[in-house]
Length: 407
Ligand SMILES: *Cc1c(COP(=O)(O)O)cnc(C)c1O
Image 1 (cartoon, rainbow, N blue to C red):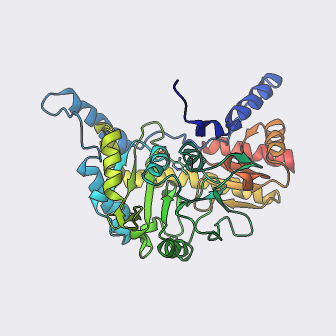
Image 2 (cartoon, rainbow, N blue to C red):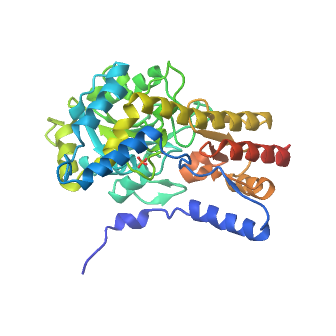
Image 3 (cartoon, protein in one colour):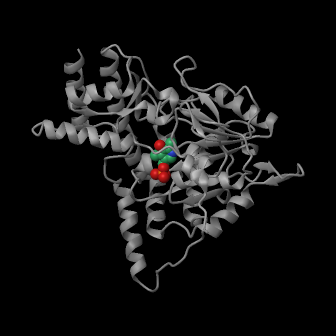
C-alpha cells in the first residue's frame, strides 16, 4: 500500500484567492454595469522592455538554424548571463560575488521553495510574519513543523513584523538555524537598513545559522542608503544565500527567469560538527533536478543589463513606484496608517477593522479589489495590501473612488 507524505495534510488550504474571486463574481453579478479595478494581485501589468524583446526575438531566430542552434545549456545558466549578473548586480555595488556563485533558474519561487531540502529535517526555522507564503509551506511539506493551531504551525519560530518594530522583525529569543528574510518585504513593503541586516549577519555567525535573503523587489529601492543585497553587509558571504528574480523589475512573471547566489564561503555543518560548503550541494541539486532556463529567455534577461535595458527598466519600475506614491498619498489623506510605497510596489494599510470587512467595503463601495492581510500570516490580521501593479489611469480612478466612498 502506497502511503502519502502526510505532512501535506497539515497544509492549510489557501482560500484567500478563491475567496477573493468569489466575492468579485458576486459583486459583478449584482452590479453588471460597474467595472472592478484590481489592486490586489502581485503580478506586473506592463509589457516587456524593448531591449529584452529584441534580444528574445533574435535568440529565437538563432534557434532556427543548425549553425546557431543551441540544445541543452549549462544547468547553472550561460556564462554571458552569470557574468552580467555578477558584474552589474554585485561587483558594481562593492559586493564581491563571482559568476560561478550565481545559479540561473526559472523562478525565485522554486528556488526559495527548493533550498530547504539541503538542510536537516530537524533544523529550527525562523520566518517573518507576515511574509510570502512559499517559505512556510515548503517547510511544512518537508515535515519541519507540527500541526496548525491558533493560526500558526507548531515548532516554527515566527518573527512578528508589526507597527511597533516598523515591520522589521527583532532577533528571535530562542536559537534558530535557518532564517528567512525578505526586503523590500512582500506584503508590507518595509525595507531594512545596513545596521539592521548587520544584526542578523552577526546573529547567524554566532549561532552557526544561515540567512535566506529574498531580494525579489530590490529594483524598487530608491533610497541610496539602503542595501540592495545582503552581500553589501560585511561577513554576509559566510552566512547568507540571496534570491533574485527578473519578474518584478523587468516584467518576467510570464517569461520566467531568476537566480540564486550561493557564495563559496557559505557553510553549514554535518552531524559530526564539521563544516560543509553549501555551494557544491546546491550545484548538485540544481544539476540533478533542473536542466537550465531556455536560451532565448536567458538572452532576454541579459538585455536587462544593456545600456538601453537599464534605462527601460528604470522607467518601468519608476512608473510602478509613482503609482505606489499616488496610492499612499490618497490612503494617508483618508487618515489611515500605512507602510511601504517608498521603496516597494506595495502599500500595507492598517484598516482599523477586520481585513475581510475592509476588503468588502472597498469592493462594494469603490469597486476596488485589495488583498486581505491575513493571507500572509497572523500579524496581517486587520491589514490590507494594495499593489501598484496597474496602469496609471486605473490607479488614479481607483483612488478617486476610494476617497469618494470613505471620505
Ligand atoms: C514575486 C516574488 C518572487 C518572484 O518569484 P518568481 O518565481 O521569480 O516569479 C519571489 N519572492 C517574492 C517575495 C515575491 O513576491
